[in-house]
Image (cartoon, rainbow, N blue to C red; front, top):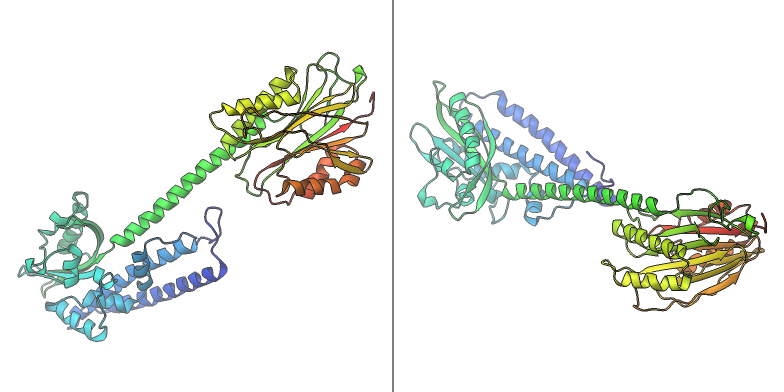
Length: 518
């Protein structure tokens, strides 16, 4: 039996699981006892009680099918797939009662061996056949090959939607009510029974006169005369339409769920690949300006470079890949671009939108556009985007020659400055979320840094509340300023926020101002 807890299905609570397990155990015990009864009925096929033994075997077979159906439904329930057909629930809740199923098969018969068995069943059971109950979906029939007499129970007439005054269908008439593709199934069962003496056990679909389609399960066997020839054929017919409809719904639900899971896995893979393709390729630590990039850049020019490290912290759900980014880029004039941000939403659309924005940020920064103007143009870009999004971002440009940081923000937490064991957020210039207001203006602020200063830029999802993340980062000031490298600072932040429940990924970018001429 599959475990009720899996990645594909929600877990069933412990009391519910215990109840279902108990029902499964009871069903198995009933099934074992029923097998013993079946062996007893098959032990002595001869004698004066042939008719009663035949009906006992029929009742056993019917109960076996009912218990097997119940077992399948309980297994599906235990896997966490709820049944969504009330009528089927009513059927399966009663399906385990072999005595009730037995009465259903025996009670309707009215003549011959069937009639004698029916009388015994009514005397012992007295079961009701209320509308919509299990009993109203089980009927019986006998076809006498010697007299051409056809005997149907009242319930079988109701299953077929046929007027009892018209009589039961003969074996020659019955195929005309059956689906064309199912007619070979019925013909094969009847032929095997009449010619080879094999028991009947199979299903077919019938179309009633009112055009209602019903699925019928048929179980029975031939009745032999004294010479061993086939004298008649009897059967128990069960309307399993609602049960099969329920099973189809379960299969379709499973197929749909698996299809959705495949789509989700594919989308997650594409989202991860898109993010990895556009985020900075460097891992570990980095120094910018590097000194071997653009003319006039780097320590040779007498400036204070930035030592950098960054990290992405995953969300609590691995399938919620968002549009968060971090970036550090050496610009042609020797300055360094620093940016962090994130789009609303998750999945491929968010990561593709992030890739577009990050490409625009890099392109405009390389073209020499200042952070405030850059934010304004990003806002214009989002205004004409086919998929509007809201974006929070920080864009900063650091000049190593003057150790000056010029930056702008769009509805995003300000960078944090740590110096000599203390920390504070930088004063935020005005700036609304990108994409929120057409034509919005974005101011920029300026901060002069000192050798050894530490800058922490982060997306707002480090903690459940952005303000909470800022406060918690500031409490790390003594550890961060004492750290030997930005990479060690990243480890400190990852330890502090690693177990934080996040609805989306979060990024942190840490930059330390190197000593002059280092």
